[in-house]
Length: 74
Image 1 (cartoon, rainbow, N blue to C red):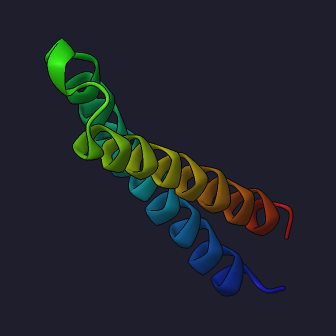
Image 2 (image 1 turned 180 degrees about the horizontal axis):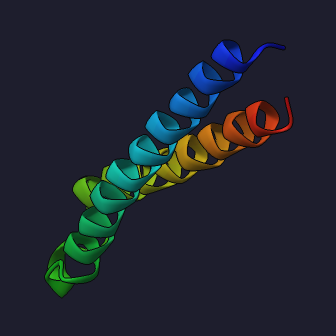
């Protein structure tokens, strides 16, 4: 791989890192909102949706990190 292509992949990895940061911030905010949910709503459908969103965000972070790791090895 030539220097130009390596630089492009390096740039892509930086964008992926930024994406992970953004998603992690959203996940943190969602976790904070969930943990501050009033007790009478903790078993509600809304909480279940929030928990599912948190799990999905975590999966997205893991997937993006896997891609970045694969690219950094090139």
